[in-house]
Length: 75
Image (tube, rainbow, N blue to C red; front, side, top):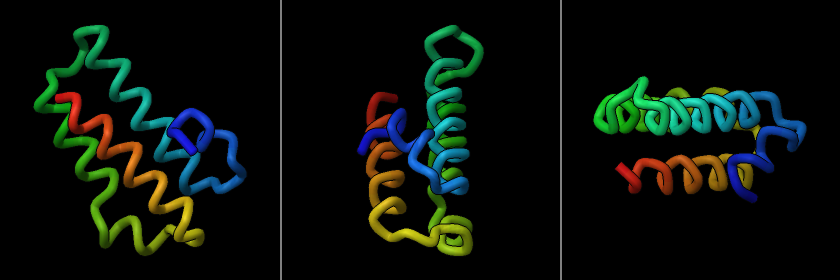
């Protein structure tokens, strides 16, 4: 499952984070954020302590972390 699919997967905590990650990525493409700013935001998005409090589905959590990590690797 990719981030776009995750936005409609029925897990509100995952959908919100996936949408936010995609918005950050779009902002970099539009020149509104620098790659370093985007990287910092995305890393915070998947910070373990915050994510562990909200994540109810471990498979979805793993897919979210993987998708966001893929975006981070672009910067």
